[in-house]
Amino acid sequence: MNCRPHGFSAIVLSVAVCVTSAEAQAPSQPLGEAQIVEGAQGRVLAMAVSPDGKQLVTAGYDVPGDDSGRHAVRLWDIARREQIRMIVCDCDSINAVAFSADGDYVAAGDDEGTVLCWEVRTGRQLFRTPESDSPVTGLVFRRDRPILVSGSDKFYGWDARSGKLLGEVASPEDWSLTCVTISADGSVIAAGAGLQAVLLNSKTLQPLRVLPDHGSSVEAIALSKDKKRFATGCNNGKIVLWEADKPAPIHSLLAHENGVNCLAFVEDGETVVSGGNDGKLRLWDFQSGRQKQEIAASTLSVDSLVVTPDEKLLINNDVIRWQVRNLGGSAGAKASPAPAPNQGATLDLTDLALWEIVRGKWEKHREAIVASGDSRVNSKPTFPNDFVFRCKLKVNGPTNPRIRFGSFHFGYEGRDPRFFLHGPKATGEPFPFAFGQTYDIEVRMQGDHATLLIDGANIATSNPKRVEERVFSLEGGGARSMSSAEFSEISVTYADQDRPNGRAAN
Image 1 (tube, rainbow, N blue to C red):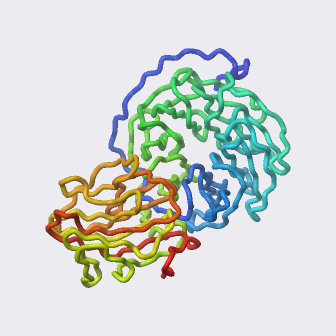
Image 2 (image 1 turned 135 degrees about the vertical axis):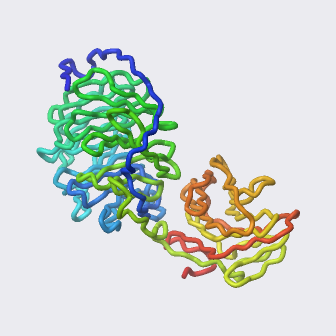
Image 3 (image 1 turned 90 degrees about the vertical axis):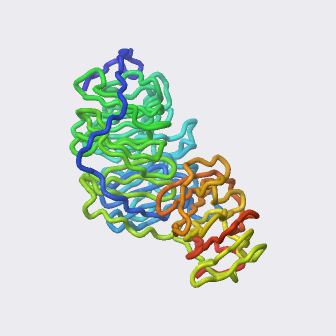
């Protein structure tokens, strides 16, 4: 790497960057099918894997499931896909988490500039730093002794046992830091700092190399294990690939819509994995810059991804859950059954006795509720804001069925037979369906974000406001309906402590 003896404020060379589009090639598929793990109760933003590859820590907007306003840091057993411990902390939304080199400690940094550190074995809090003027955007542990380095407006070094501030170093050109990572051997820290990126000696926090102006905020950075290659990702959706012995980048790729959030190297540095605001995971060949694979991995955005130390698994966030995939192919990577979101309770609503008939003809046929003509029922129980609604729906002919959740609804779109999720800021593509065919419908509501899935595929989202309780309604059709709709296997899953009013859960 090139040494920069003049510190962060050194003059940066102006380098012309050639931007190329993502040209796909057709190699073997290096990522297997996703296994889904649910249990968070808020958006997951940050993840880290323990040095032995056995545990995962997740955090973000995640809450413990009560009204305390606190946030949750969760430890998971990766092999069993099970939660080991939930640590509840009085802090703001968490942007960064990290394991110590020996796996004994885990740390988190929040939006108010606070750093917290716990003992992994017991969950005991070791320290909490005072709030600062800037959010903590990255955390790493030194390898040689228990020193924690956090990034915000500066680099701060903390004693990982006592929380004592050991020192601080200004960022380049006084930019706010956007991301921080550390090399596999612990010798180099890499960080995004405004439009630039910097590589530092982890012991002295002095710069080894300052990368040129990217033209957009650097939001992600990754180093290969041998430190000979690195990658930066920008808010404009661009990924820039670098070699340590070359002053200019070898590739600059238009990789994601609306920004790159996270990066990692796999396959001994031959492949770069990127996650973006478009909800996609993409794999890139480092040498050619060509796209190797694309996966629709999140209903919202891929905010964080990590690779296990043995490079066998890739893990990424997906709103209120996380996904794990085998690296090297789909063999053995079978989709696991997803437990109920929030590990809560489920109420079966396939019973007309649980609905109040408002209008129209409603009948129970075998295992389905069938509605004909201009028809509507309202649920007798009311439900909490956060839930997952599931049912099977068959439309037998020209009619316009809907499922209403208060301020938003699922249903018929226009005059054509298409399903959509209506509501504030609705996005997605309407789903064309056929009469007489049964479809699996799923609507997920978390906070102020709703997602529609049909037959397991993400179709649309909307952003209705959070409310205290919701009444659900089923409509078999409107005034011009000339047929019937069948609803079967109707269920609602919600947090166990948020049982709906008027009915105990099964």
